[in-house]
Structure formats: C-alpha cells, structure tokens
Amino acid sequence: MKKIINYVILISLLGATAYILISNNDFSKFPILMGKVNKGFLLLAFFCMILYWICDAYIIHKMKRILNIKGGFLSSFNLVMIGQYYGAITPFATGGQPAQIYLLVNDGVHVGTASSLMLTKFLIYQIVVTFYSAFMFIINFNLISGKGRLAFPFIIMGCLLNAFMLLIIVGFFFNERLFKRIFTKLFIFGYKLRIVKDITKLENKLDKYILDFTISINRMKENRKTTFILILTTFIQLTFYFSITYFVYLSVGLREVPYFHIVSIQSLLYMAVSFMPTPGTVGASEGGFYILYSSMLPKNILTFIMILSRFIEYYFGIIVGGCFTLFDFISRKRKKTSSECDFVDDKEMRVDGNEF
Image (cartoon, rainbow, N blue to C red):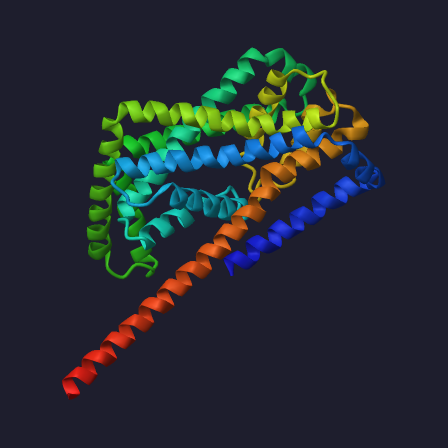
C-alpha cells in the first residue's frame, strides 16, 4: 500500500510540475534547441552522473572490505543503483538505505553490521555536504544574497536542518546507550499500545544488534586513513554531481557564468530542497532552480537547461536504477527457485536410496 501511495504522490507531483512548465513555456522550440545542443558537453554531464555513482560504489566497496563483507565492486555498484532507485521514489529519499540494508542482510550480513555501514556512510556524506555547502555559502554570500534573494531563507533553513541532522547522527554514532534507551522506550510504548508482545525478546535482539553495530563502528574508527580517503572521495563525488548543470550550461552555447558560481549555486540548491517531503524533491528542485538562475541565465533557455539538468540528476537515475532493481529481483528469484528445486531433487534422491 505504501508503494502505491508513493507512486501516486510521485506521478501527481510530476504532473503538477509538467503543467507549470508547459503553461509558462513554449515547448515547440525545444526540439530546435535540442538539435543545437553540443553533444560532447551533454555527454560530459551524463558522465558526471555516472562518476557520481562510481564514487558511491567505491565508498561502499571500501567500507565492506573494512567490515569483512564479501562481494566485489560490481555488487557494490548494484547496491548503489538499487539505493538510488528507492531513494528517488520515496519522500525524503528514505527508501534507499533500508533497501540497501535489506539486500546486505539477504546476502548473509548481520543487521548491525549492515546498518553500521550505511549509517557511517551517511554520516560521512552529511559531514562533507554540510561543510561543502557552508563553505560555498560563505565565499559566495554576495552572489547568493543578491541574485538569489527569494531562495535565501530556504538555503539558510536547509543548512540549519542539515547541521541539526548531523548532530543527531553523531549522537547515535558515539553514544550507543542513548540509542538503546530511545528504543527501549519505544518498545514500552508499543507494548502499551499492544503492538509489541514481548519486550524482553526485542531487547535481547536489540543488544545483539548494538553489539554488531558497535564492533563495526569501532573498526571504522580504527581505520583513520581509510576514513580520510572516504571523505575525499565524497567531496569528489559531490563535485561531479554539482558539475552536471555546468556542462548542460556549456552544451547550449553559454559561457558567461563561471564554473565555480554554478557549482556553488547547485550545492546550496541541494541544501535548500534536501528536506522537502517529496520524492526526489520534485517540484522544489525545479522551483529553486528557476529562482536561483532566473537572474543569471537567459529566460528563453532557462527552462530548457533546467529540464536537461533534472533529467540527468534525477530521472536518469530512476531509469538506470529501475533496470538494476528489476534485474536484481529476477536474479534473486531465479536463484531461490533453483535452490528450492535442488533441495527437492536431493530429498527425492535420499528417499529413493532408502527405498533401495
């Protein structure tokens, strides 16, 4: 039921966004503009998105090696793409990490270990993106406050919310007692509502989960050199992502706005819309893009640049991630069916042997 609701919300938002764009723009010119696009720069924009995914896969692969989780780079890339897909179709991108944890657990990884991997990765990402955007905000304050006055309050709010989220994650990361205390209270509350039947059983499971989690976190803390490499890789990853719009900008023949300005604006736009409760921040990203670039880019081509950028940043990920998700589902189903058939055949052979 939740999946159906998410799809309905996503389709409704896409429809509303499309209506706003169509009602305010002449789309008959788009095929002409598309024909004039520099395909080399456009391919670089797509390549930046692919490099973003590769960096993400490298980070997960590196962390898996620290935590002694089996699997090659391709399995990490598969994990990234499935996370991309579920993150893109769920509000606040909340579906990505649970899906990745589920896949890891399904492959035999302990829940605590899988959760610590994803939480550590998320912590590193939040630290880097928060400081990245804060740095861009400080050095480009005059540019943002002047040309992006309407989006200024949203940027401030986004930065504060991301900083607050970072503090919460750090609190859980370094204080497992707090983690246990919160969940114990939730168990008690669930017991009073008759949702939870056995508090002791859940607490024992939680203790095992926290033990696996703590061991995994300590391994990550001990590998400081690797942590530094992961932070640097995340910085490069974000730079690839924020560079997409610049290459789209170059592809339409524009050269006036410097690379650094566009990367700065993209990082701040990301912060401004990151906590919007829509799948893929649909609607908010398009609106924010229009506001921030309206005084920098020609009006007759602004929407075209926005649509190309958003397709590469968001819709391209849904298409590719959806293909990976479908292939993974079919592959796992075939393996399950094959193992069940082998089990039945083996059982029949043992029965036949006994009959002899």
